[in-house]
Image: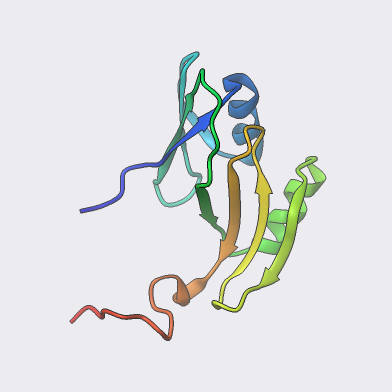
Length: 126
């Protein structure tokens, strides 16, 4: 089994889609109520769904990038505002945090080998 995609709720499709295109994601579906994006590396995708009712989203979406500090610098120069600049975390990842126009939390990170194989991994593949 493999994860296909994650869909984030948004309250302004045009603004949200522009935000993700500006970040460097490739838009592959564009409708007034739904947008889908392809990540520039790895073949993963995610989508946006326009919600007419107000919502509170406590979901966090993670995007991994090996050259995290350079990516954050590039995005900062494009006008993106980060609530947390890249820093080393206690769980052995380096991450930065920002929010999209609808308030969805985005973590840009690099974990390397620790993403799937942290020292405290519970189950191992035989």
